[in-house]
Image (cartoon, rainbow, N blue to C red; front, side, top):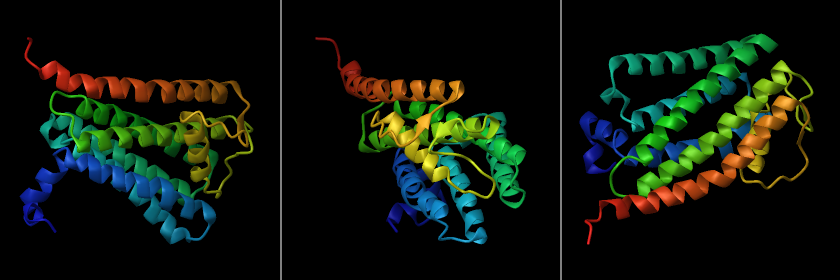
Length: 236
């Protein structure tokens, strides 16, 4: 462990600095590309599925720590903690009582929590200061969180309005969030493989908004990161 992390104060400073965004990106990458596919493959049992839920909540809480939520007002801190705990509780309830309403509530609150985290991460990335490697990693983490956010929204749409997709469907005890993430990433990057097609109007509207975001996000991100150092230069 690095010397600056030997004390609890050092750990706190790590998470509340820009370096916490790098740790968030690593955790998020493991969640999306390793943990969720293992969940969907059925290689892990029910007990490990609970670990998946705790892992996902932990990733979101790590993101909150990376943003230094303790610096905000206590009301915001309490709201964030309450939302994270409610998300975890509803996901665990959906595991034990797989029904349309439990899955729908868990997906809905997950969309809210992830959306708030994306907004806070982008505010941290774009705040005044040098364009560091950690901030760039934070922007990539926000991009992956956008894909996860839309995947949860697609899953919510399919729960509320069945047969919203061709080649993809939610069902009780069918842990296929990874498949929704796959479709979300394909849409966000405008790859569009065609094996999954949105059929309902809400699903198509979400897919259109995500594909548009996938085009605009990198352009706006690069423009902002490039303009930050230029804005700090003194006028000639």
